[in-house]
Image (cartoon, rainbow, N blue to C red):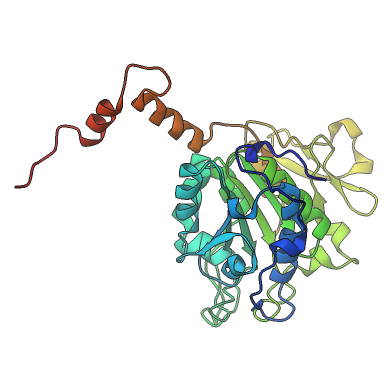
Length: 353
């Protein structure tokens, strides 16, 4: 059943019912056997029919990296662009074409190293696009160098004595850039990933979804504690809006606010239920979401997944169109085409003979 996605209300609908098969291309999928990218691709292809959109009005833009082969495998329009610049290209598309649903596929190296500035500015502008950030904590395409999310002391081909760089936390970074929607999921948890994709698609503005993705060749089992049935309940915090933040097989762990307003981990049996922090994904103040993003340790203990923040704020595309309408007089104002030309040219013009 097709759902109503407010952020996609201006995008043309599909004429006929669709299935995951409609979004699969005839291209051979060229990732290493066992790569987590396969699971993400399958989840996205299965989810796309829910949007109910014409395939020619969906665009996937990528940069460089293993994840950036994604557009080849989606039977939509797409662009395999240049390293780190996918958010900039996608911004131009989303801002100029209301009839497109624009998705960015990027990796931890592509997005957070050479593409760091493009990413944070897309987030702060709140352009109407969706960013899927595959995080495997390694450079996979270039054969195993440490990345901006690799843990301190990581031994790789480029850091044989251990990395000296403190890693980025992509969720914290996005929240610091005032992103209006930030979430995290895991490649192997298809149900959870699909739910997060659904929430991102319904959001109007920039939605960033970090996806923990296993690279079984150069960084195998990087997220195994979150996947192993023997450990996942003990380390995974599943965020649900309006629900107390607890985890563990019997919800035995939780968080409360300390007197200094920081989050403190407690045993739920030791505190009144009323003291437990209730997750509010719609809080306009990002400090709640940011505090949650800092709970996770390098060991992955206490790792929150789900939607951290989902708030409404002005969308860059809408503001730009309103500004153009005012300048051209299409909103009934006194301006006209001549005035727009004057604004663009100003007084610094020359005639070359």
